[in-house]
Length: 396
Ligand code: PMP
Ligand code: GLU
Image 1 (cartoon, protein in one colour):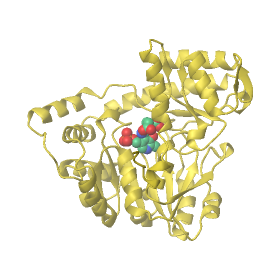
Image 2 (spheres, helix red, strand yellow):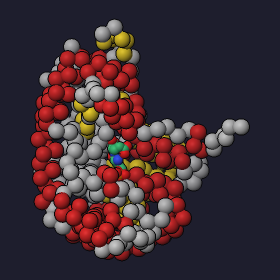
Image 3 (spheres, protein in one colour):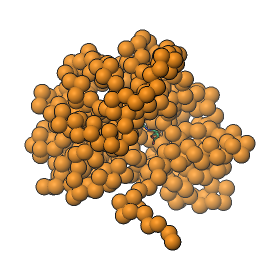
Image 4 (tube, protein in one colour):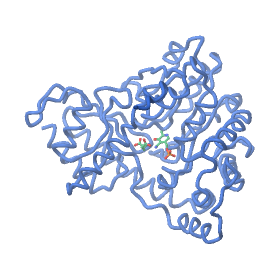
């Protein structure tokens, strides 16, 4: 007898970012030297004062279940941080700490969308959004943005995509996979449509501390007073503090949503790891200079990657204002043979690049944008240099 999987999970695709990274690790395990620019994960170690806090918590016996929605002290630290940096007032009852921002997103979609609802997803989009929205039974409505607009959604595109079933807009700012950042004016123009069409917004701001060129980051609910009630902010410690493995992310949401998400999480996973929560408190309340040090390094790498891309004829990428990705236009290199292997699309291109040059990237098709490939520059300068030498060699 075989057990049939449910209709809802039948359609779930594996995460392409994690799959490419797993492929790279597989090759590495076979003894190959692999230049891994696939997964978006800071290559820095978690700062030591954060690790120390987790060790101290373990020694102090904080090894039991916590409140399912997160330690009160952590929620207070998160709300205080939003008050200090953005002037936004959130009660701790509006905050739910989860097992990473990915889990917070799943909770947000699951708790707010009904089967048949439409959720607008500007493409290129981060791989997990579409799959997680589908798990709620709702329909992701993919709206293609254009490279000329810096891959940013325009108010007209948003308005045209709305139907009577549209309920949600997903805004990832700064964007994974393109690195583009919205200005206050651009967000204001989108907000007008959001209010006009009575939508709510899931604002994934997990890269907010990684914005370059001394530009200010603009958090969506700060731009108009009436937006906080219709926004669910998603954030976490993974990218800011190099804490991907600790699995701590959160949402800040209207209280009715947060309360239901807390109930859902209490049934679903209970609390996120107690020790990781103590580490996250240390991250938020401790010295922030570690964030600046990593950001300076990411910005140097961003400059280097932009310069290498510009120097390869046929390759281009829009300006990366934030996050740690470059979304490269590879259209000039498709429909060609590479060492006798014909490459038709971004998946072929990325797989051959990995096979032939041992450089791991992620195909644009996984982000809803054929003809592109994403590289993560959360890798050492040395790795980036060799990887781009090899990409150059590959496309020659
Ligand atoms: N949102 C975006 C845009 C991301 O790139 C990531 C990276 N995985 C996440 C959410 C989830 O982060 P995490 O689950 O590690 O907190
Ligand atoms: N967000 C990272 C990426 O896009 C991590 C991988 C993942 O969670 O999918 O590569």
